[in-house]
Length: 362
Ligand SMILES: Cc1ncc(COP(=O)(O)O)c(C=O)c1O
View 1 (cartoon, rainbow, N blue to C red):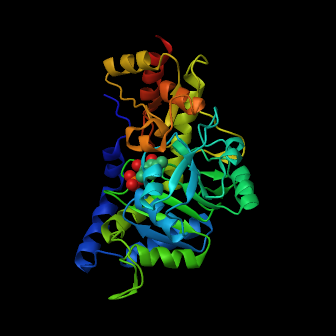
View 2 (cartoon, protein in one colour):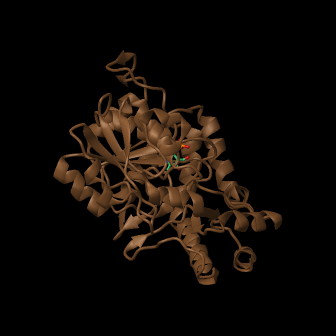
View 3 (cartoon, rainbow, N blue to C red):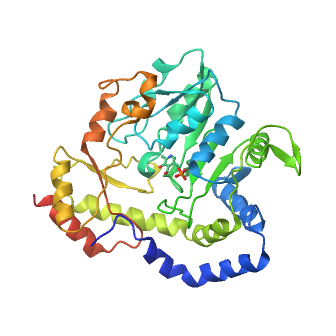
């Protein structure tokens, strides 16, 4: 059996440090927004070269609070990709704003900058690119458009911790970079968690208030906020893993390189553009024979997952937005052909060879 990700293996390697951290936190009796959250925020802000970072309860909340702190709400439009996890659009809808989709690039499967301008109206307030599967979106072109039309940029970095364009980390290009620490993410907690990094300390200040019931000072509430705090236990565990994140990501890239070398050229392999650091949250191939390949893998007890079978514009929940099949052909084709293969730092070379043998010899 080869799983998509082996969290247990990673845990075994860091078990002693995790238990030591845990025991320190339990002894301290300080569980919410304490010193470990502050240390993690400081480390993650420094890692990205930005002035501030705020821990929140999930990646979904990170997007929601970032949008709200940037003043996006009812009547506004936010341009985003239809090829992402549903939370990206949900967060926009939570604020009362409307997600407006623009099709994706064929190679990276990220939002296509050349399709953004035609979607801009007088209601557009922001662009929300997602660095899908760990390959950065084209932030240079997106930033140019945002500047031209005076739009905000909120980056969905749930899948891209450590990814970069010319050494500049994703999340640091726009007004806010939103992270998820869902356990299977490149930097994964032992439960839910998220973080928002920002370039403007006043936005960080608003996020800190919003995450804590609209309060900066105990029992004084200046706005209607949320309970969306990162807890000390998750932050402590994340501190242990954060020290290793560059090694984890380098190992993911090594595994991806081996897949690239071994998989037949009849299969479309993931884009990895020059000058970028892809962190391979997923290693995603595309083939018209996707379902057949997946069945062969399943028959050999090898996991694989279709991320994502239905693009967001065709999801039942957002039927009221009025999109239809054919609106975003590149995203729709991707949804029909994608297949993500097992990838994680501890994945054995022999497992990759076994997986590729099954893919190539159909
Ligand atoms: C692209 C993307 N955006 C947002 C999220 C939401 O993150 P979370 O599950 O931490 O709320 C996820 C992860 O699940 C994701 O993959």
